[in-house]
Length: 142
Image (tube, rainbow, N blue to C red; front, side, top):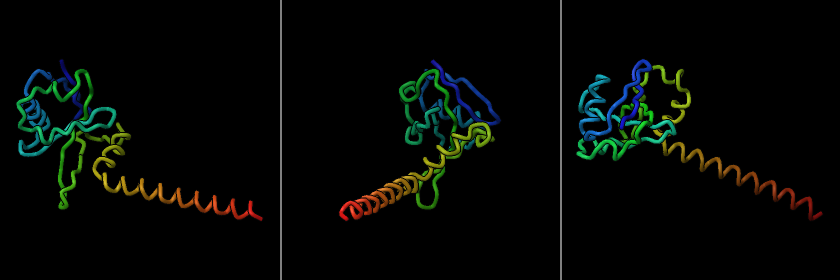
């Protein structure tokens, strides 16, 4: 049972899932040269983040969280002044080699803004529809 982790200058490493999460995550940080106090996470190809931040010290097996034979992109998890989570890909030149990754990470790092944008879009569309219906009814009544 293994997974493939993408990071650095298009590096790919296969890692065994038959170990404890604490050791798996420790090894990830070691391989990419991060301080052990930093938080990392993994994102699968569909854009789903595995939420490893709360499991940094877990004794559970890595196979209980990750899917075997899956490809994951290694992410650094940062927190801004407001406590919002920001995801930084540890895959160099990801914007050129994986442009879809940049958009996914932007949405993940700004979930409130993305939700607000969707709500505003729906509100504007419904207002436009209401105006169109009113205009159509106005002309039909005459």
